[in-house]
Image 1 (cartoon, rainbow, N blue to C red):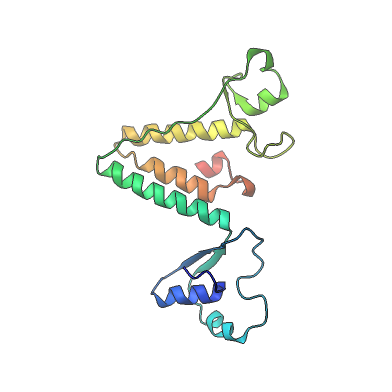
Image 2: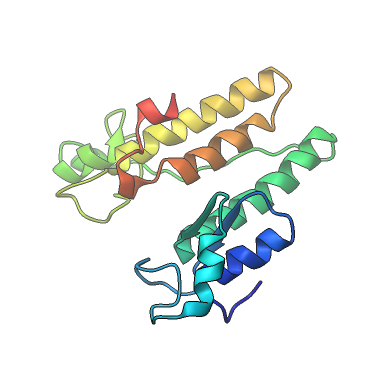
Length: 181
């Protein structure tokens, strides 16, 4: 909304429009070191000391993901609740050829003896999550979808996948069953 001003002034301006909380997404990819003008600027002091409501600066990529998920999720839920559409998720998996089912790569990327596989999400076999973790979360999402449809509340699936995407990122080591539960 206000591309040429710093965080404190953006928050102040939004507050003047009666917002009760503010998330400001950075407009460039950078480390979030400061949320205000890095130089000494006495004019920003009046804004900073008068910001007394929830406000936060978030990374550009996270802001884009959040915006896309909220916009798409909201539209999809409205259409499903109104009976205008019936959404069915589709996930891409592949199988590991029989000759490779005992290989380290197949074991780390697949479940069910190589029948369902996904690529290593971090593109490195040495640490972090593996493709089989992605397959297991995919199965969880399909289960939520099935139960949501059976209970005539298909829009609940959107809540689950949007929440999981936003609150359970891999880089924070929260992409697991405990968080899904």
